Amino acid sequence: QVQLVESGGGLVQAGGSLRLSCAASGRTFSNYAMAWFRQAPGKEREFVATVRWSTGGTSYADSVKARFTISRDNAKSTVYLQMNSLKPDDTAVYYCAASPRGYMGSNRNWYDYWGQGTQVTVSS
Image (cartoon, rainbow, N blue to C red; front, top):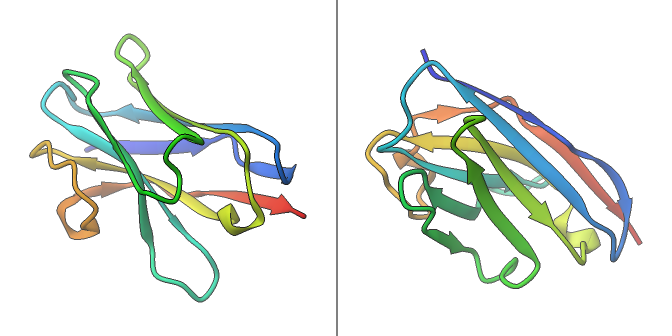
């Protein structure tokens, strides 16, 4: 059974940085794609970024390009989301997700496994 455990959320001032971590276990992830989504109160869960575990190839939502960086550490089976120049609009619960088919798109229905989420709050 795949388990995804997020950590690293918290409260930060606008312009600050946070790094989220997603520890993955229960499978060999070499064929997987991993992603971060976020959900603000009263809004739909939206795609943030994705990384292919085998190649490190990445894709980002336009709203976070040049501010956020997704990466993975194969040895630690961990995916990271480095978030810089944070804005109040980035406030949300951030979720880690895994696609066994290596899907790297923004459709959340193609991700089979989800973590429990970690809260990120950006104050103005």
